[in-house]
Image 1: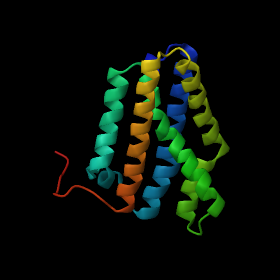
Image 2: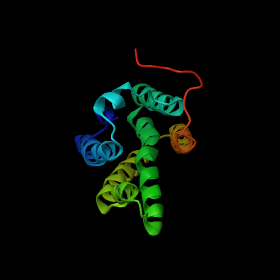
Image 3: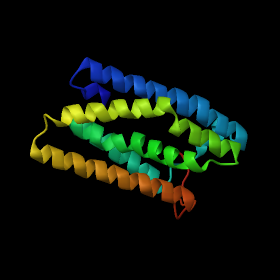
Image 4: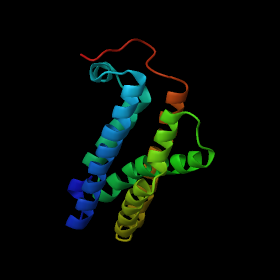
Length: 169
């Protein structure tokens, strides 16, 4: 999405947030979770995306590739925003499980909230230049991603997966 940004400033903000997400999620959180649960990199690599995760990822990639910057941003925005809202909601309850609490703290943090707010501000700025039809399409994409977020969480909760075995080739 950042490649299509209308300004260098917006591109740099999105790239900075992507780098931050990789640093926080992959290194700080995912590495910690893998260690806690005894999951190796090889096991992670051999794991196949669930149906919803695959469909959602494909939807985001196709939208970012085929659509305008504004439409791509509208599609990826729920990825940031939903995690912030879930983190904030769960922070109020807390968790006696230190692993789960670390996840909550990560997504409820002020640092993460600031990054999400920066993306929201870019969306608000670029939406002012969109036509009525583009705004409707952006809303549809945002809603579709929000539904995918729900399906992603629901599939994980139900421990869903493929009905038949699939392996990486």
